[in-house]
Image (cartoon, rainbow, N blue to C red; front, top):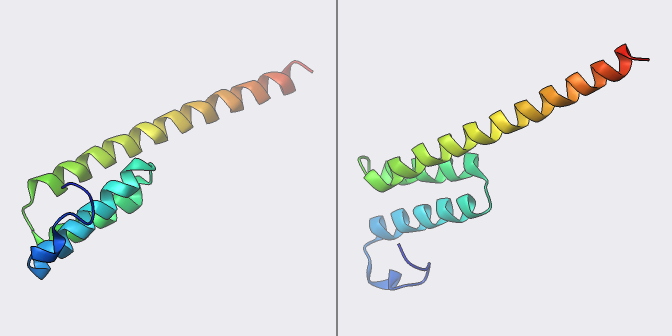
Length: 90
């Protein structure tokens, strides 16, 4: 994909739109906003419906999103157990 401004002026409008959406998705991945990244990759799939890169990025984002949710659930569980122990041991 390269940088955002690399030779985009020579591309047809459909390819430029696709590249812009992929680059936006990649930017969201860099700052770990996976839900927004998935939206951009899905929009890119509307331009190129069977694109392997966009599909792979969606799969990767969903996996990272699930991992983050499991970590948050584990932290919440530990917090609930700690609060329960504090209340129980009073």
